[in-house]
Length: 139
Image 1: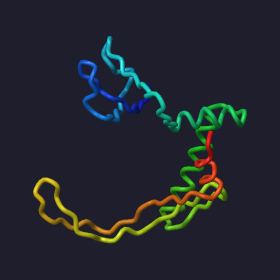
Image 2: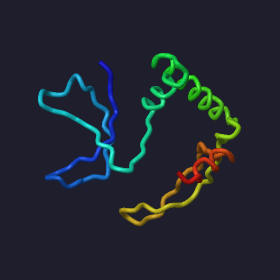
Image 3: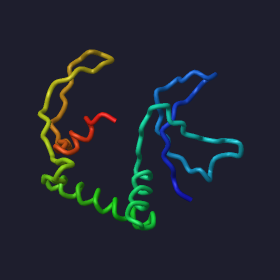
């Protein structure tokens, strides 16, 4: 019994009432007759972790459990290095780094009153030359 995450558009009488809702649910606990499905819109290219695991398994000739472990190891390595304030460079793909966002004054959208927004660290990604070229190639 595992939890599943889906992103879907809820429709009321055929009309979308929300651009998208992320839902974490236990498929085994849904009542009989309740079906949650995800429809990809035409032209919408969304690749999630499960899609990447499937592709890695197929391309590397390994099973999905091994592919899942591999991708988790890569992501944990990147996250661990960023937590330490470091950088991770994948030549041709890009560089993950940590940036500093300064403290600033914002506005509460409901009241219009100024609020203080604290300084914080943010993860950044800078695409490499090969990735930029690949993204800009015409099909």
